Amino acid sequence: MQVNEYKPKIVAFCCNWCSYAGADLAGSNRLAYPAEVKVIRVPCSCRVNPMFILRAFQRGADGVIICGCHPGDCHYTSGNYYTRRRMALLFSMLDYLGIEKERTRVEWVSAAEGAKFAATMNDFVQTVTALGENKRLEDLRCKK
Amino acid sequence: MQKVTREMLIEKASALLAEGKVDRVLGWKNGEFSYDVTPFVFTDVESMKKDFVFGDFAFANFSKYLIKETKKSENKVLVFLKPCDTYSFNQLLTEHRFNREKVYAVGIPCDGMVDVSKIKEIVGDGIISVESGDLIKVETLYDGVKEIAKKDVLAERCVNCKSKKHVAYDELMGEEGEILDSNRFDEVAKLEAMTADERYAFWQNELSRCIRCNACRDVCPACTCEKCVFGNPNSGVENKAASNSFEEKMFHIIRAFHVAGRCTDCGECSRVCPQNIPLHLLNRKFIKDINAFYGDYQAGEEVGSRAPLTNYTKEDLEPSEAVNKEEN
Figure (cartoon, each protein chain N blue to C red):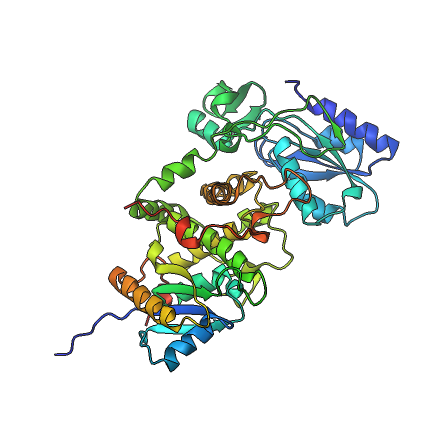
């Protein structure tokens, strides 16, 4: 009998200049990270609107991670500083509404940190797998 | 504190109208009942004498009305502002939403407004008329006239009033008030102390009552976008009752987030909510977090101040540190 193992859906918003290149490096170094992670490339981590995160959850994501350049290294000078403020407030609000805080994360990954990218994704997938399916921010109409 | 009466305001308005300083007045008028007071634009003294009211139900914050009103004519408009309204007034000026030259603002003192739902809890249904004052006279269909102490039925936002000080005016009636020490974050702290499951149950219960009338958005002096994300027909969440619990959560998170750092905590959103959802608790959570993370900030206190979300420092805390780690 085939056992259906639970596999979470993870959306990773990666900034074009650092984290997306970091993911590339992880790939060319043949570092494995789970296939459950769906990478979405954004020009800068501050392109990520809070609505994107909620939309991802609505459409069935179990976890959302935002990766950007390290503070101080933003290609656009200050984008990730704004991300940091926005996401701090948004995550605090999600927690206030009782939504599991482990489902959202912000990590700074540079283009040279392929290993960190793979490790971060492995860790995040593990955390979300332990949490199970996203029930509190799900939209039943999007479930098949 | 010196009480401002209806007659004093009419006198002030008629003097300014006669001088030609202003050609219309933003004021309050009775709605269906004497406790549902609505905003109205008066153009002459006669209509003011007939319809103008001021009392314990003159809630409406006129700041947002100025955006459209100032575009209607080259002349000035007279507006009466309570202390909490002046914060929204300044915030809108900071965002260049209306022309200050076209407004004549008269600051009026306020000793709190009355929440009619609290009166209804005491006297029951069938209120015919309500008379303002320190002792509020309520006439009902079944019980005759009853007197209630005003302090027992003050609106939530007035119980936790943050300031009696006017931060903007051309002319002030009465004395200058002071910024108060309020306990407005107590309720937020109480929620924060709950477990995640309790909080989820609390908000699920509150938000599931939302009928998406958008009154909270429409009344909010910080929500002044000409095109709103929730007005987009392709969004799937446009002006309709939520068909799924996700929708109401998304609406309320995004609504509160869009005014984070710009919300002056005037409390209009909770007042107009027909379902009595405590929306101010979402806004206050953001204000409390901003104060804790980035230093005390009161939106609208000063024209031109930079909102916390359009600013940053190199030492800001990380999002992972923002959420309290110890709990559950």
